[in-house]
Image (cartoon, rainbow, N blue to C red; front, side, top):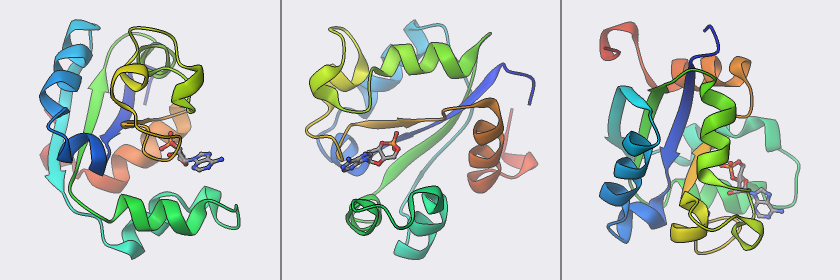
Length: 139
Ligand code: CMP
């Protein structure tokens, strides 16, 4: 990956609350092109693998339970400087600190249920995109 791609998930609460359309609109209006996308339901095992980097932290078990509690939308996004620009668009992990106009400020309901995930580095964007998508699912 060359720094132009990032990976996102619209989390179960945001999907359940019918905010996926509004979030995808913000993503497109933020200049991101959707390269891959799917609606899917993670098993606890898959959610645990995806968030394995957080294993052992106090919120890990509950995060795994939440992320496998309902459907999510996973997507690969393209834009110059994608990882950093997407993190600006979504706002801080804790929505209480997120800036006005960010996705998390608008649609997060708690620190855990913070509407969306966004990769924190180019390396993790590659790993996370590969976790969800084969080369036949990217356009
Ligand atoms: P995300 O960007 O998906 O990356 C890891 C997730 O763990 C994060 O968003 C939150 O949903 C969750 N998380 C991070 N820190 C905490 C915390 N202190 N308490 C509860 N959940 C957290």
